[in-house]
Length: 189
Image (cartoon, rainbow, N blue to C red; front, side, top):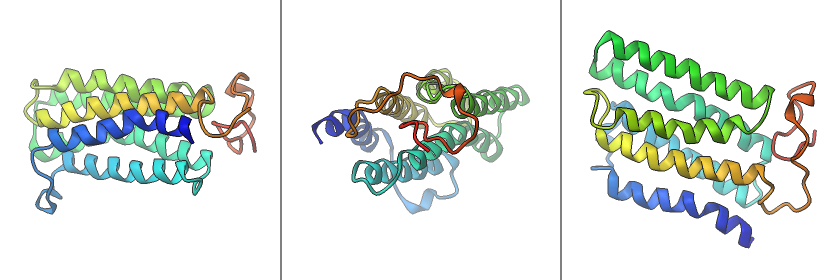
């Protein structure tokens, strides 16, 4: 249980930081895609908590995190569609969607390490948007940087075996897998 707590520290710290970063948490903002990102993060906290409590399998947690990786750039595309921007930025956002979807796919097919790498690398994407584009609020880009680094560390910690399940072997490459039935965190079917 002690290892679980250590692994969750960055996630807990990012959650606390969000209360300071987000200007207003209200249902009045449900039409704002940036707030959809907050809802996605809250749902991710539920999934992570359920995993820590043993209520979800590692495979279901991995699937959720893959969805999270794909969903992050969707918020930027939705922000562009809702608030407008140059067509050049739309191209950049769509390229980001392809890039992060590709990393998610690679985390399933080649190596689970593409998942924490993709989540953490998205912090650089957020930094490139911070105070630079009119369609993404600066608070969202900053909050996303904090969350991406924390979740990237969390998922990397899961992959190194520093989780509550001792003795799991993460050394064999995922590409040896022949189907999607193998759990990416435990290597068990």
